[in-house]
Structure formats: C-alpha cells, structure tokens
Image (cartoon, rainbow, N blue to C red; front, side, top):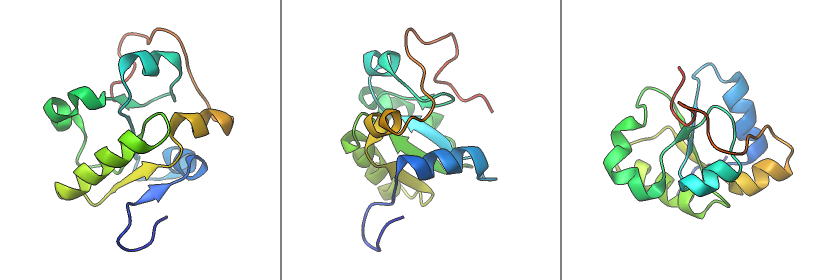
Length: 122
C-alpha cells in the first residue's frame, strides 16, 4: 500500500490477488493504447486508452475499486491521480505496469483482441 500523501499504489502480485480474491471485485483498468494492448495484456481488463480517457471516463464503474495499469506505471499514475482529484477514493496505481505483470509470470494474452475483450464482463 502507500504512505499518507502519496499515490495509492499496489504491486502486481497484490493487484492479481485482489482481482482474484477481493469480494469488492476490483476492476483492472488498462490505459495503454490499442497497439500496446494487442501486444500483451492481462485477461479480464477494462481497456480505455489514455488518449480517449477524458471522453470515456463514464465507462469507469463507480461501484467497484479500480486498479490502473499501463506499460511501466507512468500513465497509470497520471490517471490514478486524476481519478483521485475527481473524488474517487477506491483507486490505486499498479506499480511496474504490464512489464512487471509479465515478468512476474501472471496470466497474459496477446494478439488481436477478441470481440468484447477490454470491456467489462461483469
């Protein structure tokens, strides 16, 4: 977790654990662009590229915690900070991003996304 006054942050192992075990069903929000998303991604994510985030912020559920991920953690930190400034309290940056996720051996997908992939499934 994080110290007071710092950006709420979790590592990839904690993010994966929360996605599997947390009864609040957090959402993993991937803010990378489509080409990066196609190259490698976590399963069951909500994909909203940072370039479209302002127009699609309404797609981010307000009734579930949100874990934000990007390539290495910079863009996701910016989106996490934005969400916090707009009043969200249940949001955290995933440190190290998809680079750390893949290096940790956590589940990934690659290639052209399937229809509906990157949208919330429930």
